[in-house]
Amino acid sequence: MRILLSSDKFKGALSAQGVARSCEKALQGVFPGAVFDTCPIADGGEGTTEAMVAALRGVWRETTVLDAQARPRLARYGWVPATQVAILEMSAASGLALVQDLPLQPKLASTFGTGEMLLAAMASGARKVILGIGGSATNDGGLGVAVALGWRFFRADGSAFQPTLETVLAAVRIERPSHPLPEILVACDVDNPLLGPRGATRVYGPQKGVQDWAWFEERLAHLAQLTATATGADHQHQPGAGAAGGLGFGLMAFADGKLTSGFELVAVQVGLAERIRQADLVFTGEGKLDDQSLQGKGPIGVAKLAKSLGKKVVGLAGSVTDAPGLRDYFDLLIAIKPADMPLPEAIRRTDELIGMALAAHAEALRALR
Image (cartoon, helix red, strand yellow):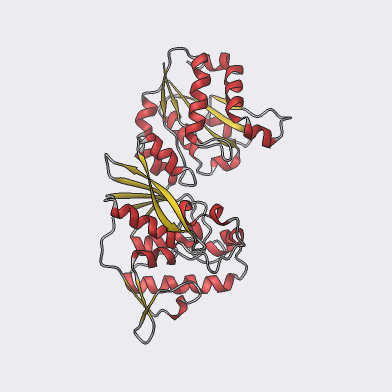
């Protein structure tokens, strides 16, 4: 029997790779002699790099970058030697979690460090870059990335300068850098435009400390006008342009990035469909399976693909809700957290709880063979 373990992370408890290890350990007692294929998945947010490095047997590399508030730090990214593909997460350089120890300063927060990571990948010889853009601390429209990549900004008097959000309104013209860029695929599962009521500033800005919407909207609109004039392409209305504080827009405008579904991108890169075809039983899951899972999350993508290929699917999560339609994607749903257990305790004991839950459902699992 061949079992595919293709879970997302249990946020705050176990990585996707850790969930797979826990499941394999427990399932060896349920299905003696089974062959296990570990294929961690993600949907483009935090954890995407770790999942893909594990699934593609890549390695880790490190580079020094500036975080969103300009402090030097080491950021790691994935590297797949066989294909020369670099796998990055903007959260490793410009993520909100990295600056939680400081007061939020959205007017100063920059994606410059993400640009530095891109440069490091290019210096490594990357033919393709896969970049997840979840978890950002910034609302700069990718301005920091543009500066890092070498875009030149000019004032009305013709002088060049390196702009920040506070000074970018002085720019009247921009020029593209001369060096070529690799193919850049951007993992993005939101469809917000850059500006307006559903744009980067109003929807995602508050969690980063944004209060003066008009101040940011004016600067992002100016940036959009500058890039449209320089490149002949206006990306501000493209679905996903407002992702990660407008970094979706910035990667399209400044790096010719192609925005694509995070789950679908990961699935193609790790050969998920073929691995499902070879499996007799598929396990997937995340920390919580609920109505939000139905909005493009990785486990539902795995389950849909498995069902389309005629495979049985088990969903595993810390908790499972009765969201309409959720159970239609699974042959068996297992919640590992006892109802009366406090969440902090469950997070500490996730590995143990996975083992207990799978052992308790051994008979139902065997019935799926």
